[in-house]
Length: 101
Image (cartoon, rainbow, N blue to C red; front, side):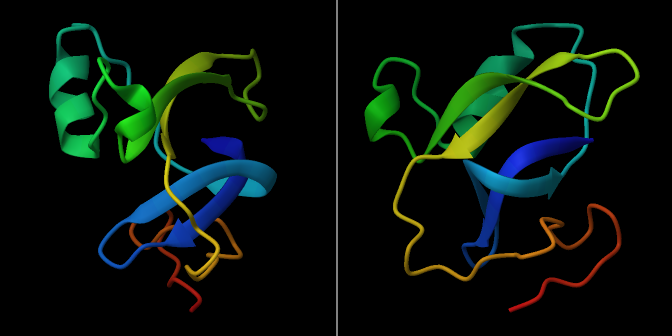
């Protein structure tokens, strides 16, 4: 899966923000929407106080699909100006590339 944005190295995990560039990720078909509560907790998203959350859950339309598909993504909700950019947009383990620091 590819999406538009920029990916930052936040240490043990990545942070995606909207912007120019391409992000590599994985797309999962979640059949039970109650799973979103567990994912929200894991990603640090609090639906009751979204602006105070580490991440915001948003719907985006994927650009590289044969037929467009809308999906949920978690967008980092903090400053990234002092974090290293992952210029190739591929966090380690997603597509087998090493992270450039």
